Length: 243
Picture 1 (cartoon, one colour):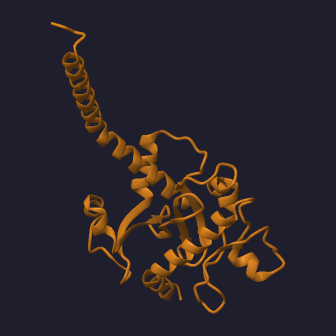
Picture 2 (picture 1 turned 90 degrees about the horizontal axis):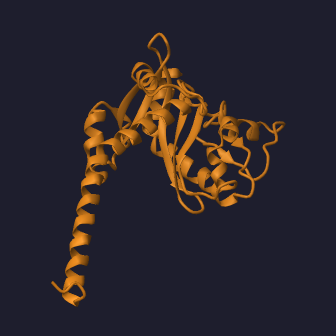
Picture 3 (picture 1 turned 180 degrees about the vertical axis):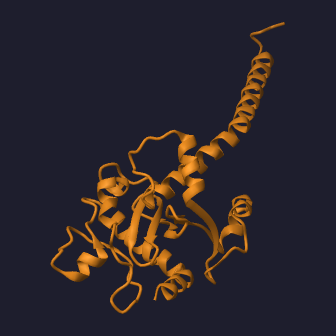
């Protein structure tokens, strides 16, 4: 066999490509379930971080965290337009295609030690400067005051817009109100610069901006209000119960 011929070289290259691609395909298939479980576990951790059940830097065994999630977190599928939950199970939602999920959101309700509703955790997302930011906003049981915030996926500039995931910054959201004195939704504004605590409007409804990241800050302000407006059918129900 002439190993220097063009035909041999071509056949060898094609055969090698087929072998490598097949191996990669098999590896990807074998790891798909593992990756899916890792992504789900990361989602659960971020829900608990936003709700204050877990500190951002807290290290615990995975089994313990999974048990904590089962004990303290109740997943619900929200029909955005009506504010209704319960029509679709969380397991069914997770198996749906992206296009089928559009009318719904997977939210979470945390419970205190006595099983009473403790906070509401909503997924939020929207454009920053370079990427789409994904996170969770947790509201107190009254549905009006922020319990916590976390961003777990984005492509913003490290040290600038990337500071949106810094626990020191997200901690400043706690206690802020998404409604004004009249009960109208005003959301939370990420201010350019620092909040002036002597001004009630800023103290209640604003947080310090991300230094050097005005576009990312503005993006968070914009998509947060948009998402909260989408959750209004449910929020209105929560507010009426607390009233």
